[in-house]
Length: 174
Image 1 (cartoon, rainbow, N blue to C red):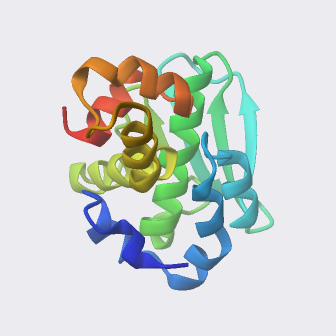
Image 2 (image 1 turned 180 degrees about the horizontal axis):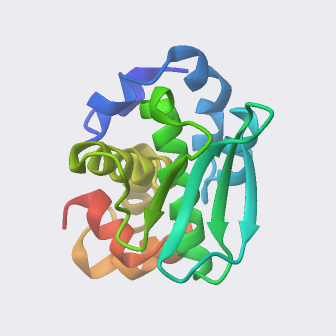
Image 3 (image 1 turned 180 degrees about the vertical axis):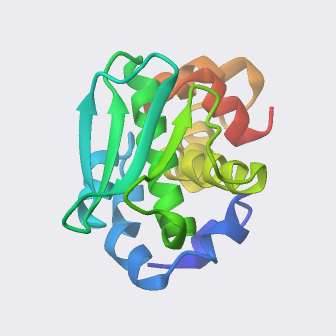
């Protein structure tokens, strides 16, 4: 794991807050695209359950009765949204683990929970960094187009990385 690989990444400050032992478990998975988000959760010891949740709930992370972390994702959401939700909840685990209890952190469709807006913004930023690794996007786009990613190619980037165009735009700041 080389944290220097986050150079230029808008989420680098968040990556530096993540426990190094957690990063060692998952860092090699970011060489893949699309990122195997289920494997990321698995390597962190988090179960992911696809359930029918109320329409206003995208997902949640909680500790189960055995103390193990589990993510619930709404199986009625679009697959790209489910992938982002898993990453968002993993980000809560990596950044805010001490705040997760049996009641968990439930995120509504706007990724709002009982946590502060700052903590939700952090989970969104790191979640998008997990889903869309900076180095991969820049390298892929440069090899294909010879340029830095642009607004014109958001849809193609989204398709390549199995993400929504909204997530790609957010990640690239465009």
